[in-house]
Image (tube, rainbow, N blue to C red):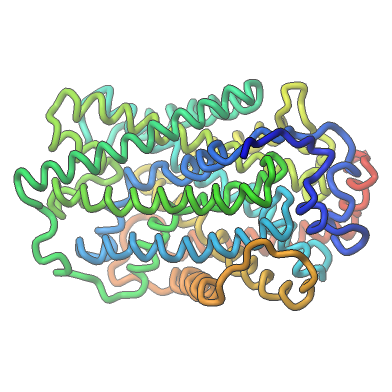
Amino acid sequence: MQEVDIPLTRLDDEARSSLGSGSELGGSELGDAALGGPELERTLGLWSGMAIVIGTMVGSAIFSAPGLVLAAVGSVGMSLALWVVGAGVSVCGCAAYMELGTMLPRSGGEKEYLDRAFPRPRALLPFVFSLASLAISSPSALAADAVVTGTYVLYAATGRPAEHAAWAQRAIGVGVAVFCAFAHAFCVRAAIRLQTALTLAKVLVLVLIVAVGFGSGLHAGTRGFGDAFAGTSGHPRAYASALFKVFFAYSGYTALNYSIDELRSPVRTLPRAALGGLAATATLYVLTNAAYFAVLDAEAVRGAGTAVAGVFFGRALGPLFGQRVAPLLVALATLGNVLCGMFSASRVVFSAAREGYLPGGAVLGAVSRFQSPLAALALTCALTVLFIVTPPAGEAYAFLVDIGGYPQWLFYALAVAGLLVMRRTHADLPRPFRAWHVANAVTLATAAFMCVVPFVPPESPAGRIPYWAAPLAALAFMAVSCGLWYVQVVVRRGLERAHKGSPLFQ
């Protein structure tokens, strides 16, 4: 069936019936139209939606994290098992978000779902989520991808996998972040086409890794699979550390929940695009990890640091293609991830600001003449740059993954809990898709593990950053956000002022 554009001022019938009207909707009850100003266009169909999901998921982690995962759990077999576990848990989480997104088809993701499920205290959880996403989860993930882009650009320029000057990696990362924000701010349709093209390039790089790995394995025998589970760690902290890296690689299947207002026929498109993109990515991830170990032994993967893919290509294809061309292709792949992530992150800021969850909504919630959330993109870019330049050199990537992943899992748990609450409190809402009970249980259990175990001391502490720094910093920020909620929502009455279409600071 041919898809057609749907004006944003008129939701499709399914979305209209799901949204309801009046005071039921808490902080979002009046919708975007009540906030004044132009709306973003519905430009995303099935294939461009899948491209955003795949493009957001496939980034630095699959090219950089396998060595960190192996170092944490100790064995090749357990490392591969965790990538399979990550795929299964992600499918369970995706099922919950498909139910939430088709039941409440509005941009904003968890902000919308928490607002409906937990209306008291008014807008507290949506507010804390918005600030955590704006200030921690999104910019830290974008910064990690941007820094890895710099790593592979330098690898391609020098032909060496060794650690390069931290300032050079970060300088390139800053340039990547600024470029992506500029593209989405002033060249919206071209940026979306570039996202799609880079997503295709990323998939082709992974297919190349799989083909080269298995071809090399058949020709010379596998190197990393001997005694696959020897040295497996039994410490729970090791698995939490490894899973943060694995789940960082799989994060992104919720990307379309933050930009549903830009999907054509969202109730029909969201489940197909999200699940299709996740299934394709998970298959490539497992095969790619197997390919790495078909060419490299365990010590080589551990020693590669965040340049596993570069070492793999150098070993398999020789110095010219393996150490020059292939790292450049990986850099383009991670660039595509920053481009997709900047798109999704800016939409969270845009939606939250328009509804009064963030101060300065008249600016952050404005649509520019280029049909883009210009100020939201600028703020997302600025925070990304801050995360790029501030962490200690050498430990930046792991720290960024950990600090961004902790609040993400906390809100995954709250979103799924809210889904279960709404099955009782809003049983009349249409649910075109219904998540399975076992999927919800798996997501909640995994979230509990990921939120508790990071505070368990590791067997052998390493590095300058304490093991508890990332989760404690995330929790501290969310505690401060509760105080900011009182100022913005209760004292300044930001939600009501946003609904009247007035600036939040007058």
